[in-house]
Amino acid sequence: MSSWQRRLSRGAYSGLLRLAQPAYVLRLWLRGREEPLYRHAIGERFGRYGAQASTQGWLWIHAVSLGETRAAAPLIAALRAGHPGLRLLLTHGTATGREAGRALLREGDAQAWLPYDSPGAVRRFLHHFRPALGVMMETEVWPNLLRAARLARVPMVLANARLSEKSRRQGERLDAILRPAVQSFALVLAQTEADAQRLRERGAAPVEVAGNLKFDVSPDAALLARGREWRQLLGRLGRPVLLAAVTREGEEAQLLEAWQAHAWPQGRRRPLLLLVPRHPQRFAEVAELLVAQGLTLARRSGFADAPDAEALAADAWLGDSMGEMVLYYGLADVALLGGSFAQLGGQNLIEAAACSCPVVMGPHTFNFASAAALSQQAGAAFRVDDMAAGLAKALRLLAEPASRAAAGQAGLAFAAQHRGAAERMAQRLLALLPQSAIR
Image (cartoon, rainbow, N blue to C red; front, side, top):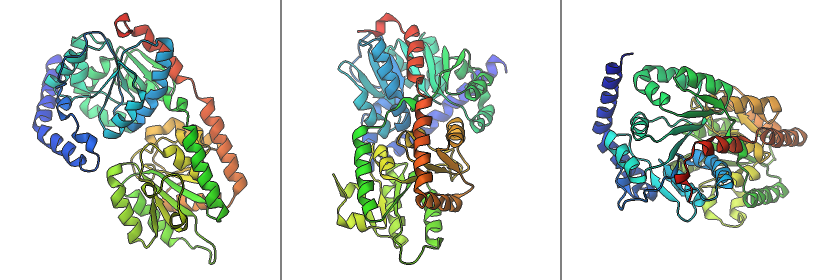
């Protein structure tokens, strides 16, 4: 494709973004009703950051949402182990990511929203912070931002990079704007060889396989211990726990339909059903769905250190808290993997494995294809065709303590076997980092 065709495509892309700005602001404001942080510093979304930042260089890491921010944590720790004085700029796109990112900051660091990918906004962002090195996590490829970084001579790295086959095919339709963006990266650190090959086909070079940072995330010991205490408490009442982890829209209804249709043995208490939706703005919706099905409900937000008698007697719990997935995996005897029963590509199952929680996953795990396949090969996860089959498999595991324990141990071994990506990536990034980013 000729250079003028690419310029034309980029111009059309930027024009569409300008037209969409009012809808973008409205969406932020509406999401702010449930998550007030979305209404914080909206000017930053358009590259307006107030007082001028220090002209010293930053190590800039963009972790758009909660999953990427958690994955960035071991990378940041490894970078600081190599250079304790680095100046960290952490940017995000979602409220959950920004909230989690606060815990990663030290004195002298900065945190901000990454601006909307319009030419003016990204130029203002780069002029304000003047980063020495930019690191985009996983799938963040923004054409105008990467072009502006190239013009400003800011080297950019795509770290923990992944590209599913589905995303590769979809990206072919936008090749005129995405290929130059991908080619702008000074380095791509891919999770797997399959990801690396697909990224090379999209124009990335050089590309190296460094592993998946999510294997280096250690579960919070206190949360895990609390979850296991609660599981023991429920176990004494004869109630195993079935977790539907990080569910997406439509999956809860599928699960409840299968739950209500299941032939439950008479005289035996049903397991506790624990639902944890992916997005906090859906907590109320899922609560209403559970009540509409005639199930008694307890919400995690309704008790603090331990569930009360009412919660222990409830049919279902709603995990309406943030940052507590480790607690929920510690609490669960078996987990159904959200996002894998709808055509959404699945959620991260590595965290469940690290908490020794067996996983039952549906057919759609293309976002984590390698981890899902390796987990299944290790005996830590089980593949089914649909939600009804998933529920049936989970209930069989609940009735087979030995199989469940073996799967949990397989998960621990699987998670430990693939660690080391954080150190490998940190070494490559530090080699690119100018001294201006060290304080």
